[in-house]
Length: 281
Image (tube, rainbow, N blue to C red; front, top):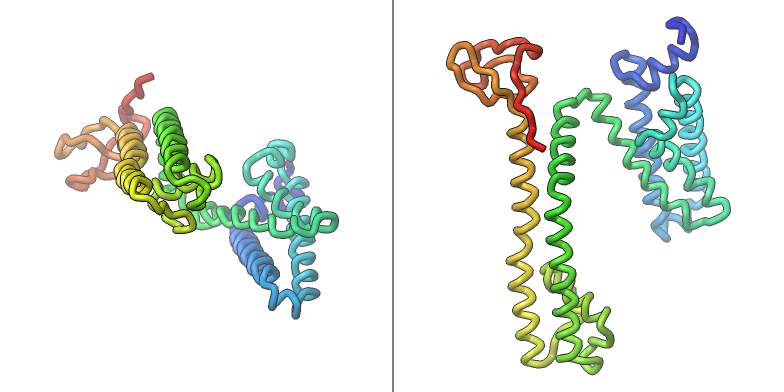
């Protein structure tokens, strides 16, 4: 698009954060998002809603119109409108305005508007916290690498709660509140996760023994997913270290974006001259 066109100026302001106007726009947008969420939360309180229902309605409508205009402007000035519309932020921007329009036909849909909170994630771009975004990507990749182990773990826990739930159902029965196997499985899940609501409590000695074993198992297995994710996270972080040697102290293990040696402070080689380890698989 031409650099001096209206579309280009709108693009710089709406999609960029490197200009004063762009930063002001994004900060104003975040304030509007938070304000709309506060209105949405207050609207759900019966005492306040009975007194200020009309005010909440018009405020919510105003925010929705504002966000709709913003969304349409993004589509207008984006070099690739389809790519923006199907991107993560594009979908969130659309979902942020749909609930109010749906509420005209389905009133309960208004509260789906809390998805607007996802838009506050734009603050990472505004404040240019690239390091935090990179760290979040490392965490995401660690979770993806550990997904098979986590799936096996949860499958094992699922089988365990079914067995324990069925066992407590046979031991306690409907007379003690365990009216069905699904109800008993719910008790097993609550107990093994150490939540312990107390709405279902074994009454027999054998049932209490099963409950004790279930609680001890809960404490034992809680550390398993933590260990899995920690191991993958450590491996992922190590894979992002470079093999370049410091010219002064000859030590390695620096971050890929490091400029100076973390051991002695000497200047490292240029990024394009560094050797990055090749990941296996």
